[in-house]
Length: 251
Image 1 (spheres, rainbow, N blue to C red):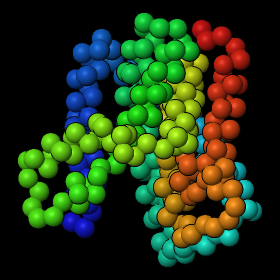
Image 2 (tube, one colour; image 1 turned 90 degrees about the horizontal axis):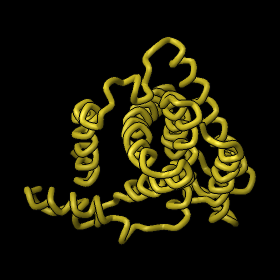
Image 3 (cartoon, one colour; image 1 turned 120 degrees about the vertical axis):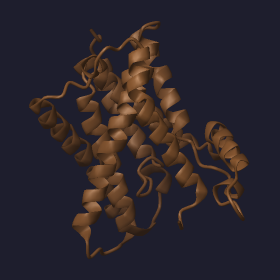
Image 4 (tube, rainbow, N blue to C red; image 1 turned 90 degrees about the vertical axis):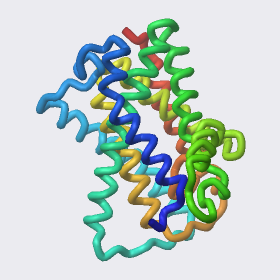
């Protein structure tokens, strides 16, 4: 148990979300997984794979540019296939759960009351807000035993963490990620393209961040780091994709 308490709490929180997701879907009036946007068929696997490759390809372009402008040191793994496998599994699970929640339910709630633009924009702001969930150090790594009060403090700071962890560029990038995925869902009427694209991004960042030991060079605020979301280049790319989706009316 060498992980900090905050990591365990966050994973337990998502476990609760996963367990209650079927109930919440039914309570929202969505009678089946197909209505939610997850139609399970063979063709769905091909769609996920195609969009996953696209997501990985987009981030590979940024990684290549970082390699050209940074003095980068990489880590060598003996079990690189294991690292890749874990990255893909993590990417798929995270993407599947988050897309079911944020696009399948949250975006749908906004979409029933607002125009497509405002529905996508507001749900994307919520998506970005939720991702600022780092706990204060004294809560993340409590000294002594973990008590019930530790759980309440962690719950509080998970909701209000953005107060002490807010960063403009990551928030902008996360908002644009939400917009791209939201627009993709409204245009495709399916969550599978979103799962593939989102999963590709998560998997690539999970693996790339482990491979990079250090990066040094100019214009780090533009090209970002191995986390990708802390650079303006990602915002430019995501903004361009959003523009392409917005060019034609959503039906």
